[in-house]
Picture 1 (cartoon, one colour):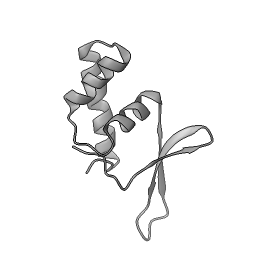
Picture 2: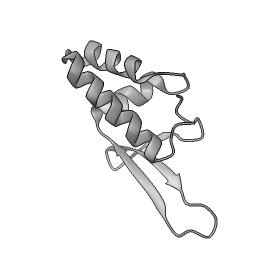
Picture 3: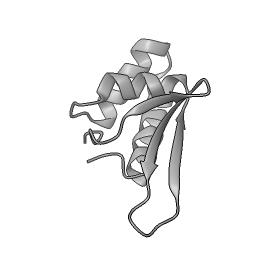
Length: 88
C-alpha cells in the first residue's frame, strides 16, 4: 500500500493535520489530526510502498514496544488511512 501523494500534512494551531477537501457539491471538509506516532509513521512511509509488517517493525524500532502491540497498532493505523481514503 502507499499513502496517496495528493495529501500533505500541515501544521495548524500546533496540530499536525491532513485536510481532505470534499468533492464538488459536498459541503464537508475532513480534517484528520495526527498524534506523534501517526506523524512519525506518515513521515517514514509517505511516498513509499509499505506493508503492515513494515509499519509494525518501525513502531517496534522507534518505541521499543512488543511485537503483538506493534502489529495491532500498525493494523489500526493502516485501517484508518484506508477508511479515510488516504492510501492509494
